[in-house]
Image 1 (cartoon, one colour):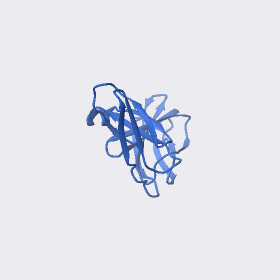
Image 2: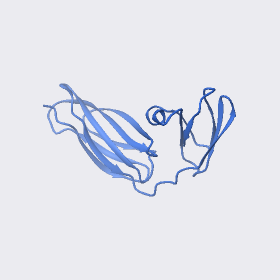
Image 3: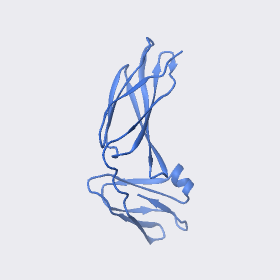
Image 4: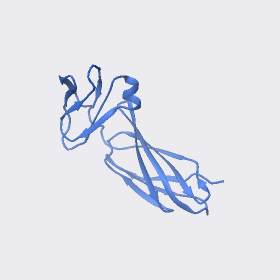
Amino acid sequence: VIPPPVIRVESYSEDSISFSLKMTTNIKVSGYVVNIYWTFDTHRQEKRTLIIEGEKSVQKVANLTAHTPYEISAWARTELGDSPLSFVHVVTSGTRPASPSLKAKAINQTAVECSWTGPRNVVYGIFYATSFLELYRSPHNTTTTSHNTTVLVQRDEQYLFLV
């Protein structure tokens, strides 16, 4: 039986998490697959996937949000097949930034100007869909470091926007 890998959180800060991966077996490990999950504004679960080569690994994941719960899951790829998943949860330190205040205004039938307030020097994600279900499961999205963007949409549809 292949055991799950051990995930150990080495450190965390407002915008990063460092963790190590190792196996407690003599089975040869070729690498790991790691998923980092978090929920954005209770509407959208996001994920970042890392493919890591080698047997032992220390990783640092940056560009995270302060005071946000993250779930790290990992499995090992071995000579005998994939291991079961293991999980660890961590909340980044600091104070979570205030939610931006979004204004969306139709420019014409296929363009919407989105603008919002919020801190400078951060990356904003703009998510949009025609239903709450689509907004949660598979929204259209774009990112920017500015405080406004024009989004192209389908004509004759109503959209929900989230930044």
